[in-house]
Structures are given as C-alpha cells and as structure tokens.
Image (cartoon, rainbow, N blue to C red):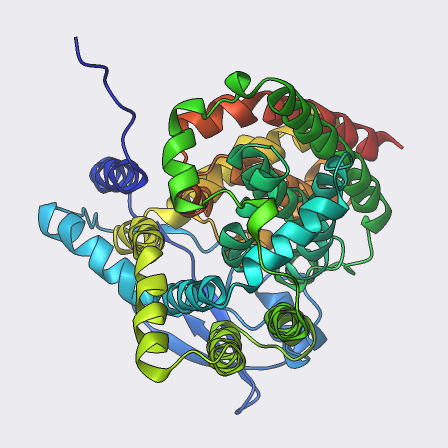
Length: 498
C-alpha cells in the first residue's frame, strides 16, 4: 500500500481557504463602525456600512464614542490605522463567498501581498549572486572551523539575536532572508535543517510574542487600549527572558541529539532533498577568505544592518527593504566581477528558487481576503468579546490568551489585530477589576504562541524554503508550545494578583 503523504503548504492553505469560504455561509455577517484620523485635514472620519461622516478631531469626540484613547495618540501618528468603535457592531445581510470568490482569492491575495512577494524574490536573486561569488562557501567554512566543538554557540547567538530583533522592532517577515544563508552554516556544524529553521523561526516568534518596545504590537496596542506602553513592561521583559531561555534549551537538546545520532532527526526522510538544495561544504576544498570575499560578505551583511536600521529608525517598509537588497546584489555582482549576462541569469534563477514561497504568502493573504469580503472577521471579534463577561480575573487573563490565539488565525497581522480589537477588548479588563495591560499582554502572548503553528502566518512560507513538511514541524514544535502555554498562563495569572 502506497504511503499517504502530508499535503504541501499550498494545498493546506487552499483547504483552509475553502473552509473559510464555507464559514461565510454559516457565520453571521457583521461590522463595527471604524474611526480614522486624517492628518492632512486634522479631522476624524467615521465609517459605517451605510454612510461616512467627518467629525472634529477633539478629545470630546473620542469620549462621546466611548474610545478611551488620548487624542495625542492620533495626532502624533501612533495610531494611523482605522480603529473599531466600541458598541457599534451590527449584523448585516449575509455576504457568503462562493466558488468564484474562492478561486479568485489567491489571485487577490497575491496582488495585496505584492510588496512582501517582491522582497522575497529579490532576496532570492541576491542569494543566487552570493552563491555564485563563492563568498558564502568561504565564510561558512571559516565559521565552521572557528566554532568546531562549540557549535551550540551558533544556536544561542542566532536565536538570541533574532529574538532581540523581534522584541524591539518586530523582526518577522524579514527572517525569510536568513534561511538560505544560515542553513548551510548549521549543516556544516553537523546539525540538521530543523535546527536552523527552529533557531530562526522560534527566535522571531518568541521575540515578537514577548515584544517590549515593538511599535507594531506593544506600542500600537497600548495606545489603542488607552494606556502608556511602559505599563506592564517589566512583566513582558521577564517573560521574554524566560521564554527565550526555554526555547534555546529546547533547540539545543534536539540539536545535540541529532549531532550524536543523525538517524534521530525528525526530518531524516528529507535529508537528501535538503542537502541537494543546500549542498554540504567540503571544508578541505574551499576558497580562502580573501580580501575580495571579505568585502563581499561585508556588503552582504550591511544590507541587513541597513534594513534593520531603516525599519526601526527611518519608518522604512517593504519598498525600501527590497531596494536595499537589489542594490546589494548589484554591488556584490560588481565586486565578484560577474559579467552582465551571467548576473541576470543567476539573479533570475535565484529569484525563481523562491517563487513557491512567494505564492504561499499570496495564498495565505487570500484567506484574509475571503474573511473580509464575507464580513465575518468583526463577528468573530464581537462574540469573543462577550465570552469573558462576569469571569474571575485570573481565569479572565487565561481565556483572553486563548481568544487572541484563535483570533490570530483570522487576523494574523499584529498591528491590524491591535487597532481592530483593543478598543473593544481592553475595556473588558475594567469590568473584572484588572489593568488593561493584562489584555495587551494576552494579545501579544496569544498571537505569539499561535504564530508557532499558525498556517495563515509565516510558518508555511518558512517551511517551504527549507523543504520541511508542516507535519514534521508540528511534531518538533508542539512539546515546546505546550511548555510555553503553561509558562504563559502562570505569568498572566500571577500578574493579576501581584
């Protein structure tokens, strides 16, 4: 009997999209009114299903709408997206998504996520040029020799640094660039590709889950909840330290087990495929790390330094990030003396290697398109906000954790989740006698925990790069997720009583 294989990432997402389309026939349609600040006219725009009206940008306007957010948060640009107005949910005529909408959803998703798709393709081209230059092989060989006998340091450094990026400026989508670079490093250290995947993806996930100063989650959510972002910061910092330590220990234990006995690798069946994609480096037959190759590696690393600085300090986003990597590829091609025809062919082939990943990102966005067009996202939020009425405050914090984990399947964007839900959910903390920072923390932890396995998030795109099946990832990560869930519940429960 032929063994049944687990579906590919694309198939999984299409199955999810079909299920969401069916939900739009079952879940009632509904919508909250939204409020948007217009900085050019210094006014608010209230948008309802049947009308749009302009309101004065005054604190009295916010108070009348029961929005507990200081006016300065809008004027200063801290809140730039439309926010939900509490107590304005209304049921609407059903807007079910049929077969035609289902078929068009991946196309719409690809169009809507064109910015990140182009980033991924340009990164693929850059990686192709780097491979052609020989600098990768020389640099990896040098690093493997330098860490010989202490390869675990690689796990600590990569996981820790990426977690730092996640907690400070929301390093997430950008990590897609790291997989083709770092997987050969981990393979040279005699680990499997799962260790590389875990160090990068789990590092990003635990960092964004325990965001401390991340403007795309902590700050915007706190602003939308009407509290200062420093409220609850100490608890989030302790959770970051505990969570990162747990993740590093978990990854190292698996890595040491695989290093000692490669047959214990969870992805032993994919070993040949992965090694063909990321060929093992012959340390005895690599180029010396010449001045030219060092300069190429420096330019390559500076692309990431500039990207991180731009995103965290200059309000850059995908267009600017993509431009940096494109410019880096051209400079590296010049330094490596790659002729124009070879450069174009190599760049296009490198971009083509990540085309499957780009399509996964688009299909995942298509799921959100179906929910928005079917008008069921706000309905999920409305019913979720009623679940916690009259609860014990300790139980309330844990339930909010799971509510946000569930909502993140439908709204995987952290900033989108914050502005849509916080004006509605944060006042619930007042009804049970606890600070609104508990809701902000539950939002972060819930989204972060589910991000470890969320198929509508980044995990499927990440797995596609590494050629690892979703089932193998679940087998690897679920014990860690359970440990983190228990730890998080303890932290949240203690926070409402201390």
